[in-house]
Image (cartoon, rainbow, N blue to C red; front, side, top):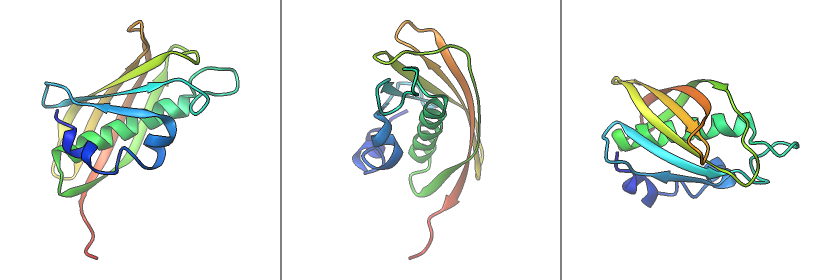
Length: 138
């Protein structure tokens, strides 16, 4: 999935994506996209591990960017996020989220996101549902 047009917008420069240090990556597959995030003081909890909330935020933001790449004239917002964290990641590591589009409807997109560490081990498995809607008239 080509994310270059999305990266030209301010979406990856503002808000939570910037705060947590997310980097969005294009992939050759049309229904797949990726993001990376270094585990540091911005997204870890007090014990030095990646925060589960930061993992869910990474997954939801990536799914949102993917939906917006598929529907550039629409607004795509997350309406459901559900995940399981299966392994801890220490500060200094980098995680990679890989999102696969499971369903592309007119108003709903369903994504599955796996988050792995540098060693390729599964950290979190997340499902995200996005609502696709028209941009409001100004």
